[in-house]
Length: 121
Image 1 (tube, helix red, strand yellow):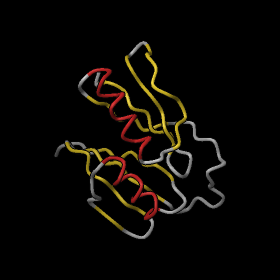
Image 2 (cartoon, rainbow, N blue to C red):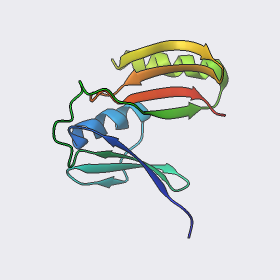
Image 3 (tube, rainbow, N blue to C red):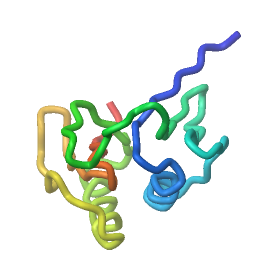
Image 4 (tube, rainbow, N blue to C red):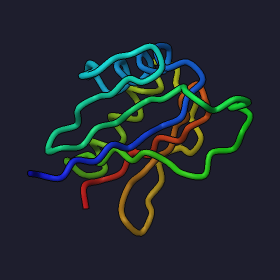
């Protein structure tokens, strides 16, 4: 059996969050229920959005983790993705900058969860 892993992002409204992530990442869900929606990322990895059992979770609650989308193609690919996402109206948390691991930026989903874009390690 090959290992599988799901990265769970807690959201207030799973279907609304799924529309956001589907548009942003240009992928469709592989599993859907009213409170849990998953996107297959390949090689046994899923990104899951879950709106169950978290009373009081709001966008005002600070998030301490982030999902990282790692892109091939160098700094130009990072800047192109930033331009595409800002055209969609995402909330920018951190403009593109050069860090020790390469070019990166951070946006937030409607619930305040952080999404970093960085180069492939």
